[in-house]
Amino acid sequence: MNRPIYFLILATLAVATAAAAPDTDQARVRVDAAAPGPKIDRNIFGQFAEHLGHGVYEGIWVGPDSKIPNTRGIRNDVVGALKALKVPNVRWPGGCFADEYHWRNGIGPAGKRPATLNPNWGGVIEPNSFGTHEFFDFLQQIGAEAYLSINVGSGTPAEAADWLEYMTTPQPTALAQQRAANGHPAPFGVSFLGIGNESWGCGGSMTPDFYVSQLKIYSRYPRNYNTAHPMKRIAVGPDGADTSYTEAVMNAWKHKTWAWDIEGISLHYYTVGKWPPSFKAQGFGEDEYATLIGHTLRMEELLRTHESVMDKYDPEKKIALAVDEWGAWLAPTPGSDPGFLEQQNSQRDALIAALNLDMFMRHAARVRMANIAQMVNVLQAMIFTRAEKMVLTPTYHVFRMYAPFQDATFMPVSVEAAPFERGDLKLPGVDAIAARDAAGVIHVALTNLHPSRSARVELEIAGTRTKRASGETLTAPRIDSVNTFDAPDTVAPRPFTGKVSGGKAVLTLAPASVTVVTLE
Ligand code: AHR
Image (cartoon, rainbow, N blue to C red):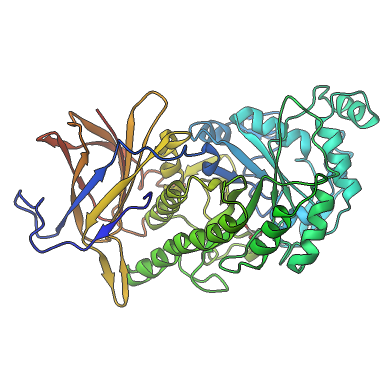
């Protein structure tokens, strides 16, 4: 019910009443306002900031003595840009980094913190200048909640339990007094706790059964003592299509005792195409574009696969599926350190972002959290920084345009559009999602996947007459157009107004574009 239905277009589609331009396809989108679906959890729009390359250091943290304008060491320009996204939560400190992170290295006076190593990501020195207090300061500055990953791979339950006590207890324990001495007498609020990261891989190469035995221990002892701020625990879940972790964790949860529990299970899936990542970030053609978009759309099948396993053990959908790493993982920027995972971000990647967010929203009953990898300077980033300069990526613009969908109510949509075909690939031509926000306003996001054909979309809300459709559209001169420090606005949203005819909106979507409109 909550999936769009793609119909192959007929040569004489009824909506083709107006004379169509030869490079324009006709499409029809119908929103069913009478059958509202689940709430779209705002945490689907979460971010991920790992100690990796320039993701944290230089991207977020420059230190209080930097010439780059900052507040207590955190870049003002980056904070300002992120505020506009209404970031709901930030996952930190990793990633693979989390399973080698020892939190005590990241507290205490600046200058007294030990230099350690970051063996996963370039083997560079980790100065530990950005630690627990700096992370919560950053969250407070951007208005987001904490999603912490604890070290299950190389840490101990006692170390993780101490970290949670340090952060969350309001009682005057020795750890709470240390927290106060470090500048934060009040407890922090930890909204989400990731119990390990990719424990099937960089997080310890654990079999599903071994991980489950660790999960039972780590979901019990690292306790949240801040009763004013509830915390959800997220277990490690599947790597792509492999259901072995999903089965093991969900089966264990179904038969759990009073002594442990979880509230979510994670899924990691990158749009990578092939391994090692070698799809070009720029300078690709329509064939490569189509292949990568096809890879991204596999997320739909993965969500269905893991949901069907979860439904077996949890038909009431108590456990959330948290897609806490997703996004395009491309060939590294030439000349960059390959361990830093730097890649450009094009209009194609904006579409990848929109299509994934659409899929998560269609599965909102189960997918209640997602975290794009990653926030700044790493993989499919929102923002690039270089010294005092900052540039917003096409992906940033999609997250900003999609902000009205946070906590809105999903509305079923049906789409009739010509498919986008390339070789053996047959992809939907137009993707659409609709939701009603708390004020009753209906928002519709439409993605035209075709790289060289416009789509003339007749948009209708069943049973109502539309008077106005307006919003923003993200288009670009080419599918591989990017923003750079010298040309930061090559890909930028611009105002968009649809025509209205007979109570329906008529929207002309540019090739390879993302458009978000509100309907009146
Ligand atoms: O996002 C980069 C890395 O990808 C993360 O550290 C890891 O969890 C995943 O394999």
